[in-house]
Image 1: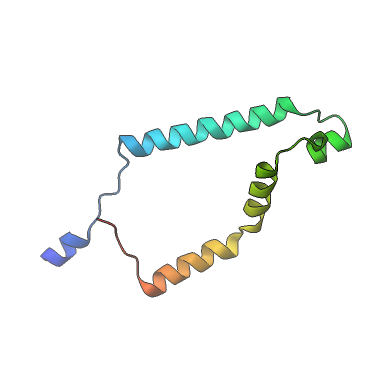
Image 2: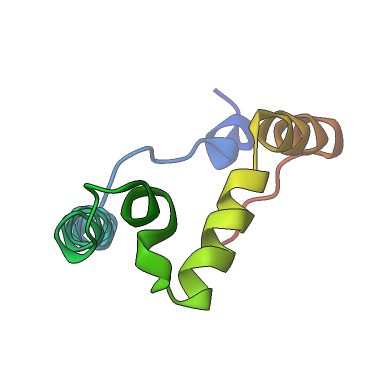
Length: 90
């Protein structure tokens, strides 16, 4: 194998920082789900769809932003990365 081929190989494994970040992310995600499940009255239409009109603006903005991101964004970003080439950060 040439040195060029060995220089381009990457190590595909997770280190301790990666695993810690994933665990913290999932704990926060599950915590936010349980918080929203028990916080608001979901037995009425107003409580289920509007969260009793007590949802902070940051949550509403994040929801609107997240619902705007779709499959076309991921496919478009992947195609532009493939067309222009991926750059590794060292």
